[in-house]
Image 1: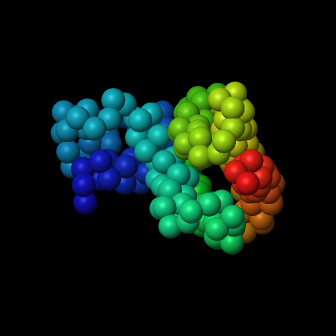
Image 2: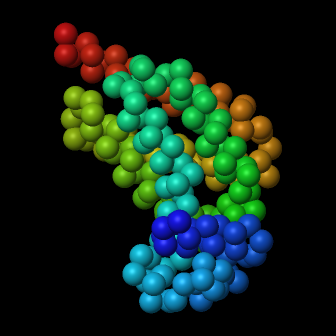
Length: 189
C-alpha cells in the first residue's frame, strides 16, 4: 500500500472510533506507522486527509466510471449504481462522516467538501459548450447540491436507505445534466 493510502486508511479508522477533535497528526502517524516528516511530505494537515477521504468516496468512483463512457447519456444507466455505491460507502463509514461533520463544524465540512466536489464538477461542466458563467454556475449547483444532500443525510441520522437517496439524486441531478447534454448536442447539429 502506498504511503498516502496508509495515511488515509489510518485516519479513516481513527475517525470511525474517535471524535475528530481527539485525532492529531501524531495519532494518525502512529496508526499508519510513519513519521511526522513522512506525513507532511504528503499532507499539510488532517483536513487535507479529510479531503482525500471525500475524493476517494465521492469522486474517484465517478472518474473511473466516466473514463469508460463518452457522454452523460452513455453513463445514464450506470449513474444510479454509482450513486448507490457512493452512498453505501458513506453509510459504511457513518461514524467517520458524523465525526468529521461534528468536529469540523457544518461550515468547515461544507466548505471542504464543496471545494473537492467543485473541482470535479467544473471539469464535467467544461465538456459542454456553455458560457464561462453558465459553466461556473452549473458546476457550483451540482457540487453544492451534492454537499447539502450529504450533510442533510448525516444530520438526519441516515434516515433514508442509500438506494432511495440514490434514486432521488439520480433523478434530479442527472435529469438536469441530460438537459444540458441535449442542448449541447442540439448546438452541435
